[in-house]
Structures are given as structure tokens and as C-alpha cells.
Amino acid sequence: MKKPTTNSEIRAWYKEQVAGIPANDAKLKAQGVSLEGRAKAAHEIRHKARVEARQFMGTLDAAMLKARDYFKYGRLDGPSFDQLVADAKKSGLSEAQAYDKIINSSQRTNQAVDNMYAKPQAKL
Image (tube, rainbow, N blue to C red; front, side, top):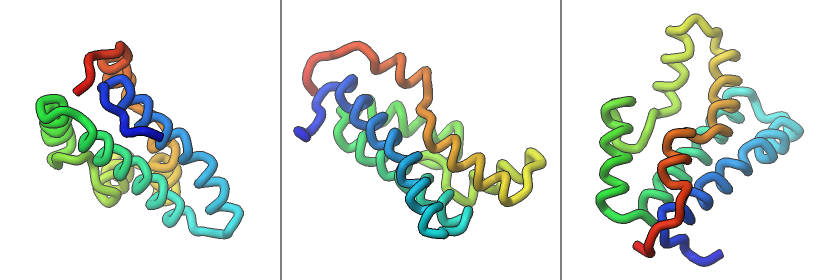
């Protein structure tokens, strides 16, 4: 695939990466990987896609998303795995439920960001 150059192409690329998480999780589950291991793998795929997508973007757009993450998560590139587990446990979930939540949430993209980048723009 050619490198995406518009924000809408970049978002489509990102969503394509995230869309592969369920199949990867099913494969890992069939291989007997622990729930924690599967949650870490799902988080890693999503995190890597986030970081790579921002490398494709223009400086201003990437900076805005990093600022959003900083104010939401206290980190420039989104929440850490441990942060997600801790937040889930604070809300009353067990460790296993926290891992399930991470696997499931890793498969969803942010609708507001999807909408912001839905329309094609000029090449970056």
C-alpha cells in the first residue's frame, strides 16, 4: 500500500490497522495465549497504529491529537496498558474484566476523530 498522504487516507489506514485486532485476538486465543497477553497485543496494535498514523500527518494535526491525548491521558501518545488496567479496576472491574475491556475497546476508533477526518483534504 502506498503511504497515505491526506488526513482522510491516514484515518482510513489507521482504521484498517485497528480492524485487524479481532482476527489477531482470535488467533492468539486459539494458540492459548493468556487473556492478559491478548489484551497487551490488542493494545500494542492500536498504540502502534496511533503512533504511525501521526507520523504520516502534518505537524499541526499530529500536535493537536497529541495535545488531546496529553490532556485526556497525561501522555502524548495515548494511554499506557497499565493505565488502562488501573482505570478499569478503579471503575470496579476485575483484572480479567479489565483485560476484556481493553481487547474490546482496542477494536473501536474515536467517532469524533473519525468524523473530523472523514472528508478528503489536500495532500499534506
